[in-house]
Length: 389
Image 1: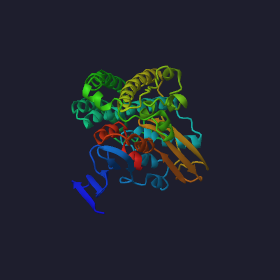
Image 2: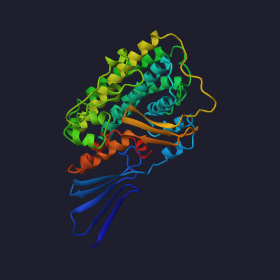
Image 3: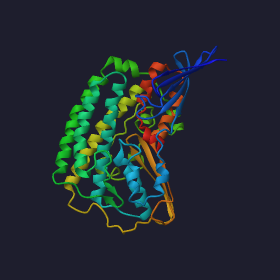
Image 4: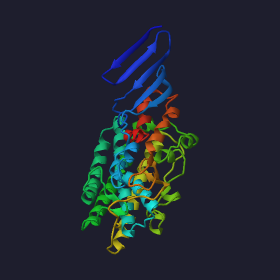
C-alpha cells in the first residue's frame, strides 16, 4: 500500500492518503491564518466532505498552571491576564476574586463598580476584534477597519487608567492599583458613544450582506444538547439556545445590583449556526455598552473613597480551597484555588472558555464541506492561548 504526501508551504496543509482509498487525511496547521494562533486540525475527508475532525492542541502551551505554584498571590495576576490576550482584565478578575474570597475580604464599593465598568469595556474590546476578523476570514476586509477604529477609542481610555495597552495589571487583591485619573469618566462616556455609533455598520455592512448570510446561515449548527455536553459557554452556547450567563445567574461584582439587573440582557438564539453566533456577539456588544453607561452613571454619584485595602507585606491565604468563576467575554472562566497557608498557591487550576468551546469542533465539522470549515472555525471565537494555557 503506497502512501502519498503533498505539502503546501512550510507547516501549512499536508495531504496524506493511501492508494486505493477514497479517504484523505488533511492537516490544517499547525500554522494557519484562520486559526487565531497555533492550532492544528486533523481532518479525514471523503472527497470534499469532512468525515471526522480532531483538534490537536498544545503548540502554544506555556504551563501557566504550574507557574502559578511558584509565584505569590500578587505575582500570579501577571500570569493570569495572558492566556486570553483579548480578555486580560477579565482574566485578572477571576484570580483576585478567588483570593479575596479565601481571605474574607470586602472590597470598597468604588472598586467594585470600577471593576464592573472595566470588565464590560474589556468585553466590548474582545467582541470588536471578532466582529471585525470574522468577516475578514470570509473575504470581507472593510469591517475590520471599523472594528479597530472603535477598539482604539476604548484602548486609549483603558491605557490611560491602567498604564497597560493589552495586559492591564490593574486589579489587585483587595481592589485596584489606584484611583481613576481626573476627568476619565467623561472620556470613557465619549468613547462608548463613539463605539455605539459605529455598530450599525456591522448590522448593515455584514448582516445585510447576502454573501455573508449565504456563507453562515445554516452552516456549522451546534445543538443545545451538544453545547451543554461539551461544556460550551459564552455567546457560542447562547447562540444554540443555552440560556446561561453568570452575570445574571450567579451575580458577582455589581451585576446583582438594582442599577444593572434591569439593564443586563442575556442574548440568545435557537439556530446554533455561524450566523446566530455572530448575531449574539453583536447584540451582546450593544448590551455591554449599555452596562458601561449604567456603571458610569453610578460612579458619578459615588463619593470619593478608597479603591483598595491595605495588605500585609507578605500575603498568605488561609488553608482551604475555593472556586471562583466569571462570565468572561468568550465564556465561563474559572479558577480552582487550593491553599496550604503559604504565600503561593498550592494548586491553581484554570478552566478556560476556549478549551471547552473548541472541543465542539468534533461535532460541528463532520458532515460539512471543506469550504465551510473556515466559516465554522472563525465563528467559534476562540483564542489559542486560552486553549493551551
